Image (cartoon, rainbow, N blue to C red):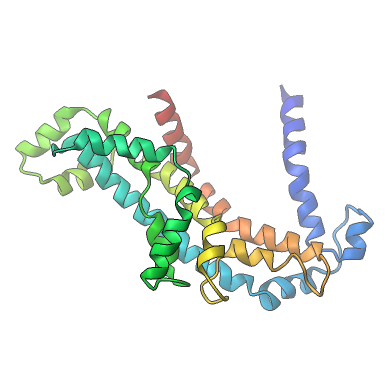
Length: 262
């Protein structure tokens, strides 16, 4: 068992270590395939953060990812609350529509969405990067399932105490749902951080561009592939999602286990 764990660590850890090594090397050192840190870290850092403005792209991605994560989580919580505790005409039909959209990738709607955002005059703005992704069928479905497993007696007790639906959500449901919220927050943040196709289509210029598109500018520096800056940029860009996962690791794992058990 311990041997298997060691082998797994080597298999998973070696590519990361090699990427760190390459991020400090120039092309000549890279092509010698030497497993020692190089002498070009400062140059590579300048190319990535100054010449190619990766720091600016990361700020944009942080704004977009945080806004999408918060917006998706709040809207999904409210939708889950409505589907479980509210009665309204067409409730079953609406939830069926949510289930149908689970099977539809965003790419199917990309042309219609592009036209809509362009007609609204949102091109190359944060609105275009954030608003189309605030609704989440997956999160709505998961919160609905989670709320369905919370005893109905709590809702009845809250109603007898005079709590309105918003108070019931904030004072009862949310404290019981931190693990599910943490799991969804990690998933939403990573998804928003890794967006490439939509920002590539809707954003022109550098001012509002995100990090995944910005990384593409590292493919050809000085008319040739520069592997050191490419690796350094990829490593830097992976840090924020990693920090979010580390910060929310416990609720993330507990939330996944909770959904699996159900």
